[in-house]
Image (cartoon, rainbow, N blue to C red; front, side, top):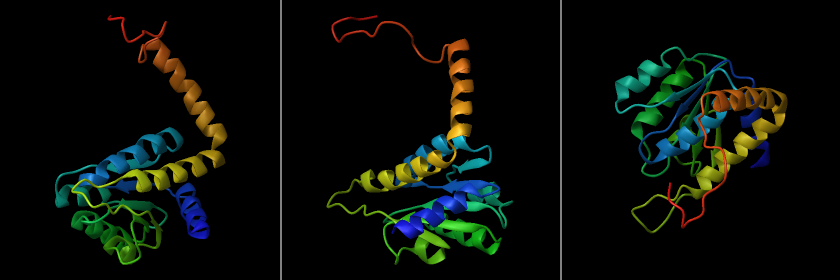
Length: 177
């Protein structure tokens, strides 16, 4: 839904603070989003936790003007759903990245975006959800080009100064260092 997608992008862009929730198999999706959002925004909190109480402790200050993004797919995380309910009760705008309108996250959210993740396997497929998250990051990036460019220029300097990345000739498969 293009209209819903654009609304979600605008809500994120105008947020005072952005909280990203994703546990269990959705944790890598939340981490990916958090990594790139931290290159764009100064106000991002990736909520990483192993307990319900820790999750609430990390979102205790969310309020009106903030956005809480919850990511979960079947089997839906009860922790994520409850944290989103709390965030909404605090006045935050709650956005669900999930698989369908009947998802517990979608029922809690102000806005939802859907990606199918069903497979006949015990392994969850994160390809479609990752594509949706990537599209959100790119759409926001297009609207914040100048800030991203400034941040990346600073980072390039830092990466060079602290030798974060290897420089020099690429090695071939038959060369060992």
